[in-house]
Amino acid sequence: MYEATPKPHLSRPVFIGNEIYRQANFGAKHPLSVPRVPATIDLVRALGWLPDDAYVESSQASLEDLLRFHDGDYIEVLRRGERDQALPEALRHRHNLGKMENPIHDTMYTRPATSAGAMLAAADLLAAANPRDGRAIVYSPTGGTHHGRPDRASGFCYLNDLALALLRLLDHGIGNIFYVDFDAHHGDGVQDAFGDDGRVFTLSIHEDGRWPFSGALGDCAGGHAANVPVPRHFNDQELDLIVDRLVVPIGRTLRPDVVVIQCGADALADDPLSRLELTNNALWRAVGRTAALADKVLVTGGGGYNPWSVARCWSGVWATLNGFDIPDRLPDSAETMLRQLTWSRAAGRNPPEHWFTTLADPADTRPVRDQVRQIIDTVCAQDGTIDPLDADVVVAQ
Image (cartoon, rainbow, N blue to C red):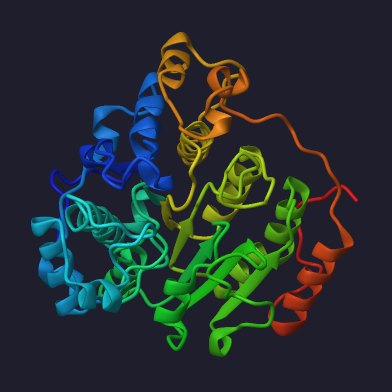
């Protein structure tokens, strides 16, 4: 069993990371070739927000750990692919490896096993936290691989570190978990892993009609899930309303022991792999309100393929969890760090100045569309536990 060492005291939020993410192993053209986690760590340090006693360097999950969710043959194939840098065609086909989506590379086992180790450490820390010491919060931006399957890679996810963390929490006797997924892509791997387990309720807010083409409106996974597929051009006011009318009422009904939040940054307007248009302000508000639903909270990363928008967003998530004020302008050290990032896409050749000088995106005040209201009403009608009058936020009409 994985155990975090040194073991921090959870009187303050804990940030879990690892230096392995400074290696860009997916290939120059892969969306995950951008330095997302290192840029986030460097930015929060430049802002003075990450003292040594709040940071934990994660270790790899053990083989025993991984077998809690993943098939042994598949784990061996990942290790073989990393070692040999090649796999027979039959194994590539069986496990969805060796394509542009999930390439064979020199940390194809080590890197996701390290992410899994971070998530297992987070679960252990939360399980061990004493409620008398106050709220316990762990942030692992390295985690969030919500598409991974027991026997194959899917959607850049070789392992499912979220499923492993949820199982570890359940193994610790925590029997009421609320999983909320803000990624632009449906959290299919997590929902399918726990669709018949009444101890875990999954809620996914994602772009309608986008890969993996699951999570349809009305998909309740036997009563243990809710799905909110949103239309293109999804805006801040619309996410605020979904949090107000769906996320918070469901959370209040569940009264979870632990809230797990997958905070993919690919729903932001500047991301190349979605057509949603959130600002990071909306995600910060959503994380803050969702985290308030339990005394034990695990927040992860997820998607996000623009290095500037991801680093700025995930740094602001850390600020939200700690109650830090967002500066109007970044200090010189943070600006210098952001100016050193590069991105091969067209947007990276002429990035707007505010990507370097600010953390918060410009405010978005577009109104809520009728289509989004109808989606919310449909989900409310599906779940009789939701009180349509249970709302704290007044959203612009």
